[in-house]
Image (cartoon, rainbow, N blue to C red; front, side):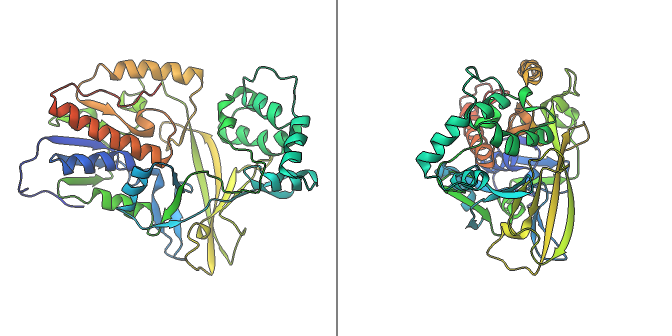
Length: 393
């Protein structure tokens, strides 16, 4: 990353990006290419946000320090964009689950169903079998629990879905919206690819190197380990804030609900579990999953191994926010923050934390690319810059 001394062409203006994750990196790169001086300030001592990766000094294994990140998308422009900055290697995410003392394939597929019930069903037979076990009496699906019982039946619900949201979200499945379960596929074939996207992979050198390269432009400066205040924004033509919107306003209207994650890392000899991700849906198991990180780089060979036990809990003000809860209370509070933000000048709230919505990496990059182009167009038209480039509600 370069520091400006005497740029050959005077910058069109000064831009501040708060956060050195994917959102501000992509926006900052595009605006720098358009001639703006861009300062990126990050409170953590590294770039790439929650997709930060580093090489373990003892084993040489690339570690996903904030949980595994597999890049998957059907968006061809986004795929082309990330491949300009990283050598993506093909990677298929295949998740296993230990429940009731047995190991199964996830997402639930024909193998899972046959193993679980001790059958040899064809796809049509499995579909008919599951439909017969479903709770037909549920005519109005309101909750996660309703969705699971109505479309999977009590056995699969109790084995795979009842305990997990209690640990992951801190709520009983009857309190969660049905949309949470709708994101999890159920298949009546033997396809165990966790994602159904055309492009899937992991950068060979890790996400941190990719973000470093995105930020490597003569008109981009990066400052790490520094927290920005509102007073620091003076003198900038525009600010892009990718941090939590409620924190930016000092939690004036209340704290939005997030879940955070704790990780316990340990090193072992050989191969610990034989796969990258082993989920533990049973409620009496305190962690949600174990990830074994050498399996995220199958093109490498490592004698030893590194695993992470992953635990979920409510996010405090000093914790790293991972997943927005977005239940009724949170969306009502968010609506008030959005209205408040729209009264501010020269600041836009972007990314997962700025808009308080969960986004995969490809969606994050797409929204950042769209925001950068919209900003340039509006600036050329001397038009107002919005507080949000996509609706958080």
